[in-house]
Amino acid sequence: MTQSTITDKGQTTVPVQVRKAMNLKPHQKVQWEIQPDGSAVVRPQISALELFGSLKSDVPFPGIHEEK
Image (cartoon, rainbow, N blue to C red; front, side, top):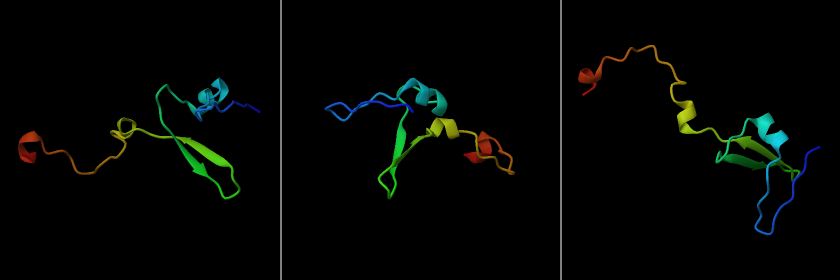
């Protein structure tokens, strides 16, 4: 089991094993979800740039002139 310590300011360092397993990058945000039993689930927050192009459409792009 991996552990870290909470500082007086409420900060902690995410251990390298956890960062690698979750593929976390510097300055990336994470979401905390508190469970009814008091435990927490931590998930990487996906940025809008990572979602770019993930939705596909059956409608072809008509071109910039038609869009205007």
